[in-house]
Image (cartoon, rainbow, N blue to C red; front, top):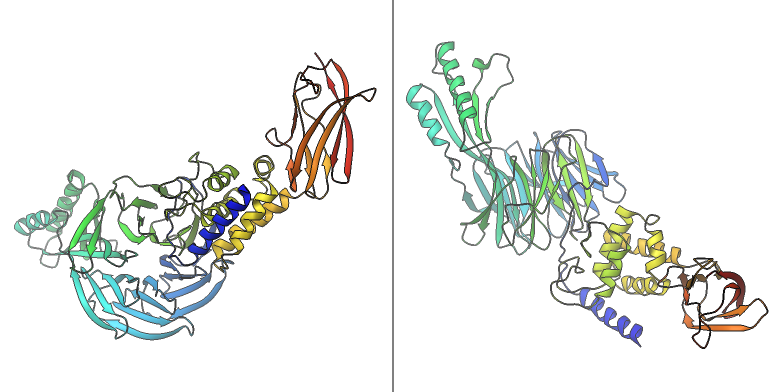
Length: 564
């Protein structure tokens, strides 16, 4: 009755979930290693998953957009048309269009099915660093080095609105004024938008950027004057206590520094949250260590991931606007230019200047012991149907159900691996339990790659839990005093009993175990237990005893020794 009720509740939950919007949380762990690398060749500026999670698009310094098959890692297609670096890519919500932003100051719209150019949006006066579609696909946001975030009507390819970021966010104007007073130099202050992202509900845009002062030496005649300016900039850098991430560098790559312009940059470590309807700044998140070159919301809107020039990816709790990241992923050879969540939120991709794309798998936090194993699967199963805040609610949708179990299975398959999980599976699960989970998982009728990976792991787990034949195993401990456990395996469901006899054939005790399903009964919590007493509850004497095992038509006998 209990199993039938469990199955009915689980079926109802699954059917309900099929018609609910997917909302996923993630728990990426510090020190976790990426599970996939894709080599683009040139520096990867941006990456995005397609809505179905099967394709990954990457924009690069080679002026192209490449489309990758997520399952195989193979290149599917290359989009060519930009005349400079492709800094950003984005899929429309329906997956039919890709938008790209480039150093050629344009935004391009591409047809995914035909890999052809649909339209070019012009209006920015400097490099376009980031593009993002609104959740309904009607609006495209683009962030640029011209200090603006522009909102475009996708259907008509016309400009709807412009969000203007004001320069001097870090108080750099005081340095510019100082240099203007004491030196005859031209100084320009600009704020560059590095990244933009819509929240899942479409009401908020997140943006990040950096501020720069450009100094021209054209009006300085002598090397000594130029040298004074450079020394002043370096002094500002060294003694700058109110902005620890100020950088002074030559704009040109020439060996003679006086032949080129010089930049004074303030690396902004905050992420702005904008109200889409009013175009006003709502809040800021503070804390990243390097220039924030990319921001992206998780599918449920609770987590904001950022890629940084300090070679890390950080994940932030947007709901709490915490200054401490939830996790930091740092296996990168160079600055991280882009981050992207898979549609279900279980995978995170990032592109780096080292030319690699890395894919990470979320680790579910079911029992919060820091290790993903079969215990997490058990934790979720034991909490099926629970509503509200619960560690076993892996996807954060407010209810523990089959989807949470599948997400744990995905992590087990990709992180722990089926063989590594085998020992724990033997002791903690039954084939009947796993078979029930499989039935419910398959009723989701989904082609999502993540779910398919989870179902595959459950199938592998079921195979490991299904013995090829019924076997009676040696009891343990043996010799024993006064208790022992008798393990066995069942290849078919059966009524099971064990009878214990003395060496002269007298019956001492019968253990009626009842109906048992297919599975492994080897651990102490599942094997047959004998306390060393006879039918009357009296301890038996030392000596050799035999135990006869019966399971349906199968029978076998072994001996054991009590030593007192």
